[in-house]
Length: 492
Ligand code: ADP
Image (cartoon, rainbow, N blue to C red):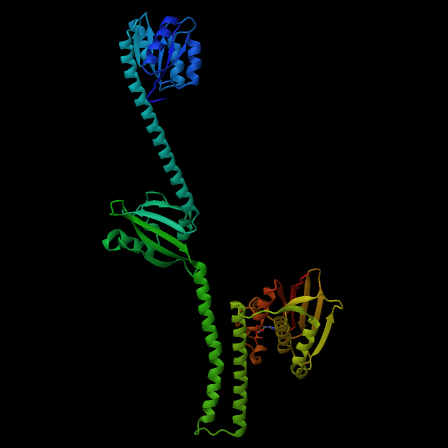
């Protein structure tokens, strides 16, 4: 369409009228197409979106009303006029029923025609404007629908629970994560939620719904949903305002902080364990010193010597404990620089056995080694692998019996270097086997009472082995003996 130049089609088999009208309209700045029969008219209608159409009612090929039907189908916004010399009331009614804008009886005067077309063109412009508004409205609705579904997708994807409650305490919206965070099976939009909420959440919600004081601030609380730290959430309540600023409801964002709480719990337990382990030897040493210093208690030289050597043992074990703790902390914080180099496992074994020579001979232990001739090269930190072997060997000595035996086997599988340290010592009870790698765990039985240790050695061994993507296994029979096997991946 052209606003200045209305585009019109004249469909009429009467050549004189067709041409005459065309000339007249062109003089009035219309752009005019003509068709000499109904079918040609339809063809042109399909090609062009005319502003106006004048259709003769009686044509040799098809009726003007049929052309009108097609026009309505293809171009509903083209304003059409039915023109005929055989005007009758019925045809006029029928044409309007089919959607013609008006009816022009032939012959018509130029003024009459121009007046009618002018009215028709105004109608055409109105129709186009209405169409434009309709398209725009539909586009907006579509955009809103897209926006809504996009927001919904985002909120569903959030791992935190999002729960919207109106000021009547009814659920307005929630995402799936909400159900898990509150440990409930289902929620219904519109239901009053209070009864389904844990007491602490319900109480905070009440404060928001009842008191104005909460309408401009957020409140956060940590709530245990399943006891014993099995599900702990952090719930943040924020007021939701209406566009006019008045209070509309509350949004609660629920985050799972169970992992964090569990770590916090482990940390607290660890601190209290360390404190306990440090306190016992210090208290013992303090006790001995107090006796020695107390002039009112007669102490012989031998007794003094005994107290001092006991204190010495206690302090030495305290130092071992502190060194083990420092090792663990360095490993965790990764503050210790590793020096990865080619290491000779046989050499590490020999120097470890040398270091433990006195303890071995004190217990008169027999050491047997079975080492593959052609062991693969291991790339690792020398100090760490020494620490692993030294710990396993010193345990095999400490927890062995007099005249016991230790077998050391080092061999290789296609992908691993395998180190096995087996002893004929006191063994480990089945229940204790899975605990021996935990910090500070020391099996308590008739044999271990007199054996000192920190309970950290195997923790350190396991952490070192795992840091090389290796694994450690234990097989043991109480009062028979124990075997530790380590698999270290070979760097090919
Ligand atoms: P520590 O020897 O300082 O107590 P470890 O972490 O090295 O600490 O060992 C933890 C516990 O595992 C020991 O207290 C002991 O009960 C048990 N254990 C370790 N090695 C052996 C072994 N070879 N034979 C029997 N028990 C052992």
